[in-house]
Length: 599
Image (cartoon, rainbow, N blue to C red; front, top):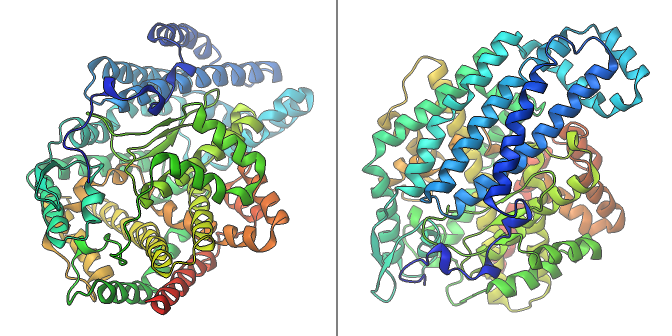
């Protein structure tokens, strides 16, 4: 059970913190880099009106823009990670605010580039590419600009959109402050009757507790807190949706959804197919919920009963050291060098491990070109957190190999493929755990974790995606988002997904208020498509061995050098078809069958 109080940041052992000095040794070094960017921006602005003059000029402009972007990336990562260490730290918050303003200034300084390049006749671009072989580096960049030409505005409008960008981030920033720095959760009773401070980090631990009253009290305490501020959170989410719709209309898209997906060249049909395919397979979810009800020995199932392990006799604790060792063994099919590189990251303080006062909740992988990957955890000693470690290192190793292989313009990867490597690591970890134990009770526990992971990653995220589509469509149709309307829509979706087998508690109607991903511009659907792709790729790796590993490892190195759909197709899975989603759901159903046999 969680500790009574959280440690202060200064009390956390240094070996359990990430080493941000590898980005900037001191805050003063950060300031020097900040000033360099600020001083160089006028040079970038001075290229305006000249990009079509010669191949040399176009190349020089690209190079300066890349150089500034690289340093801006490092500045932002350092400031963001420092802020997340302690969201109440004033100097860290100020640094983050300053780099956001500088980023907006840089975006304004380069806003002319895209419309100006698009005004250059194609034959002149082709001649530039023939004249200067160095421009070949930017061929895919130029192709991508041409693809999005219908949605690029004039230089004046682009500059205005860049200037307004910071203001459009305000709803998300307000939510972040309210949800992290200012949120005060109540004290609840643990299984021993002791008062424990409820936090976002230990909330899931309470939901996993085998004492139903503990789960119920934590669920009610969490959501009652958000219910008290329902109108504030409705205002921030409404503002976020309106900001996204404004940007989509400014760029002449049919909808905010179309605008969000076009950034990765993903057809809207992929999003719609996901929701439709999942909705058509709710029967498998209901089968799982019936099994959960039976194994827990309950006549009725509430939403706060969905996270407790169905195998109550197993007390499976995993320390951070044990988790690192197990994950390394589980990922051995990806190659000895993969494991060696990952273990080196463990030892090089890529990870910020434990929860402390003011630290941002949840987990993520971050970093940029020229830095190590960095992983934020709020580690608790359980199976779920070991899977989180494997998940986030999937992101980190994807970033590590891409940045080591690709030049800067292609050294990132799109959001659409971002969850493939992470969930593939989870699939391999599940396979390893099932292969290395014959204990029926423990196997049931592992299967329970896998099935629940599928429920939360595929079904739950698809439900979130449906909610996002619905609230944006409502605003686009001229409707207002209020606390009541948001809660009604969210409750209706929970009724559809869980209602036939679960008592859908009224308090769940406010859950939308605490989900940060609703501020990420149609991000969550990619968890579901990602796990669908990774399920197929993991099975190929386990069945085929070396050929599949080679395809997958190549995928990890390709960054954004091609479109995401093509990268995944080359790796062995076609996401333009609903087949991968259906295959993932079929696997879920098959694992339910195995669990039923063990039960």
